[in-house]
Image (cartoon, rainbow, N blue to C red; front, side, top):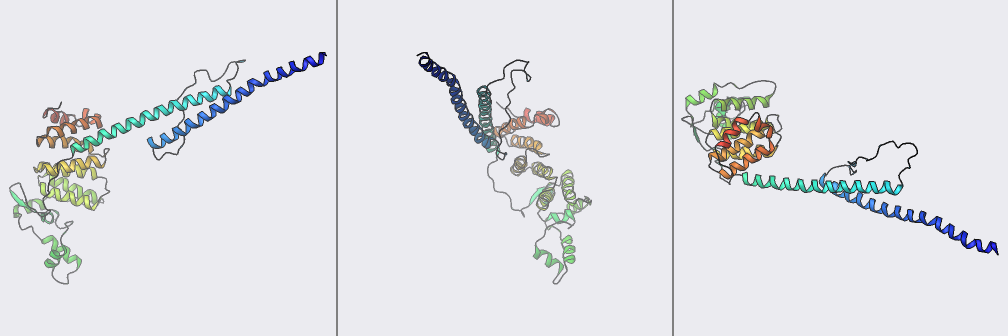
Length: 331
């Protein structure tokens, strides 16, 4: 009789002992599902915010609140507690990525809006052979031959062949091209341009750019424009590209052609914001708009310059920035 009364009691004790383990297993499974779901969401968001990544999760930027080494006798954390800590870290990272994505999208929208405002109104550009008056002498696109001595002046094949005669060799055609004089240019101007020496170093691209700079420095603005365009066409990957685009804009600005100047300044800034002369171009764009009495675009360019290049605004370009800013009234 005593043996029969003990069996129900023993069975009850076994059930009570197994219950915590069953509950623990259920909690573990639920936390694991939750963790995998959140990690998948983080990977998807990460691929949008940082495209081109390796798809791995960033390490959680969460520091443990307890010392790394436990004192003797302290109980270890349970698997459920560890898993919940991982879930909390991943959820915090997900929140950071979401905020970063929204911030990046907002910055991009603002930049695109500013660039749209900065773009000058469409205007019909003068043909390449159109004449331009500068320094009291009329010049044409054929002045490129005079200023370069024929060394790098592109000439129509028909004109070169006619000057050299039928059956002429390539060398003869080159010599004939160097003798072609622009019909509309004065002899005095042609002689003055030819007097400017073209560098001859081991870097042909730098020589072409430097020659354009010398022409601009001597105030032969139309010739400088043509020379710098020639450089950009011949050496589209040279190290002086940012310098040349900016200087080309200055050559047009000094020549009174503010439409063309604005195009080149904006193009140089858009080509590479980290370019050597991108800050100069953005600031000169503001100055160009000021000269055109386009206060709105001038102020937008100044604001963009201050945002993108705070070091230049307080350093190398401070004087120019302050002078331009003083010339316009921005809200």
